[in-house]
Length: 67
Image (cartoon, rainbow, N blue to C red; front, side, top):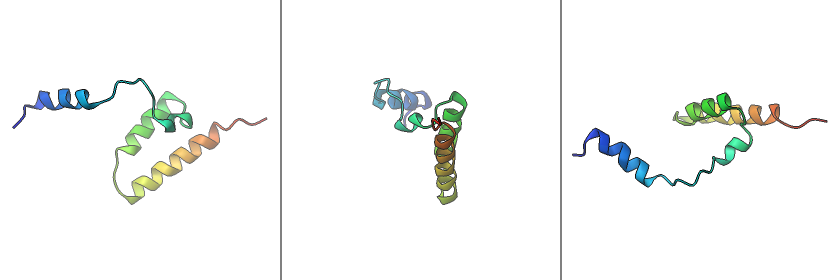
């Protein structure tokens, strides 16, 4: 059995260090919105996915460039 500390090291070793942000951050632009997106994306279930889709839709509409 692996030690608790080795799990996080293993996860870091498998994480690409490219510096690119997720594509959804193109629509969710604020830091607080990105934090909320990460919180909602971690949840499982059908209602959680619907809530996440609703959140991204509203964030995209809010940041839509209007004349």
